[in-house]
Amino acid sequence: MVEAGVSRRPVLKVAKCLAEAPPSGSPDLTVVAAGLRVVHLQADPDLADRSMPSLGHNPAPFWGRAKRCSATCKQTLASTQTADSRGRLLCLSSMFRGVSNTVKGSSNLERAGVSATELVVMMAGLMALNALAIDIMLPALPDLGRDLDIADPNHRQYVVLVYVFGLGAAQLFMGPLSDRFGRKLPLLISLLAYAACGLWCVFAATFPQMLVARGIQGVAASGARVISLSIIRDVTSGRAMARLMSLIMMVFMAVPILAPNIGQLILMVADWRWIFAVLVAFGVGMALWVGLRLRETLPAIARAQIRMRTLLVAYKRVLTTRVTAGYMLASGLIFGCLFAFISTSEQIFVGVYGKTETFSLYFAGVAGGMAVSSFLNARLVGRLGMRRLSHLAVLTFVCVIGAYLAALQLGFDGFIPFYATMVLGFFCFSLIGANFNAMAMEPLGDIAGTASSALGFSSTLVAGGLGAVIGQSFDGTVEPFALGFLYLGLATLAVVLVTERGQLMQEDG
Image (cartoon, rainbow, N blue to C red):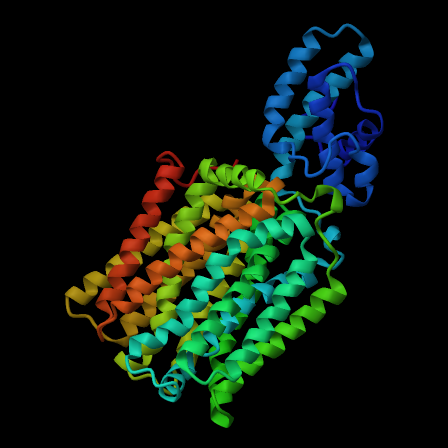
């Protein structure tokens, strides 16, 4: 009999045997064997056609039902007479308990066809498309506003915000497309469209033309965001996914560190339009890398047909799965702080504190703190868990912003208190974002693309809308900005409390 702490290797060995000769005569046993065949598929997708002929396409992963199947095994065991069946059922029962524990950190990076290091850098590059499209142009917003006749300084924020809304709105259908046609083809189309829109921005003659091009570029970039998350979910789950996401975020954070400085360097030698030429080059480069190196991570047998009823059922699962819906909303709230900071950073650093020449360096300092935080999260999440780290970070974020607002009321204004607050606040933010995304995606591995779409759509639109409200409230002081941060932090904490039924920092599981 296999013990509860069984490693995954013998489980997969037995799964392979059951895949070739599944037990018959009992619907319950067929469910159990189906679960084990899915385990085997996760380990070796090339055997899909041989291992899963009786399941049809896109079977639901078994581990969310592991405990229920284990109980089914025990119930069936009581009425089983033959020794062979008894032995098989005992094995299945104990294996489900063991796999239920070990699968929390499972990974299958070989499916991507690249090394773990290359996958981390590639996924970071795909996610960096958005950061690059936003952050590289921040130093150029005054020049862009002057050349395109933008009278109100707050309206320059629309160049960022319309991109964010395009990014959010399109994610709702990008996931289902990737679940139907696989990850690689939609991703390549998205990357080429991203580059084409960057070229359109280079030649935009008016502000409305620029906004249209930026909105469509956001739509194209949504494919890279959604599909990269789906690829990560295809090859990892649980804490392994959180660790991988943290490593990706650590590499990804090099972009907001470098992007404003790259933009500043370009402005020293060329027109602001050349900044968009860099986006064109980056999009084409990522398309070539993905096309030549990345293997399809969604086997043909696991792809789903696009049917309205199926989509509605999938989205209903997203909205009715407590953990997914809760952390999806919480992500939107906390990411509102990020979009508010990005859209108003140039006005605050330059307009309020006069940091014209050093703006990109100070912005890079905030991003650098986020990179350090992502590195620490990758090291600690396996030991402490996603909930403990992210919940503690939310509490700390609220305390930091609250302390800064209290200092403002007491007259302790100035650049140093503001900058220290931003560095500490976004250090906490990096401990929140990756873990919230991983926890939201974890229960829905069988519809990873659709779940990723819903997560990206709702969180980005919520974050973009809230970020726009905070940004447009800018009145030449930092107080409305800081108040917006505090309200969003408190709202995030409230949503987490409701999601976790009032229990913070519990064990993952």
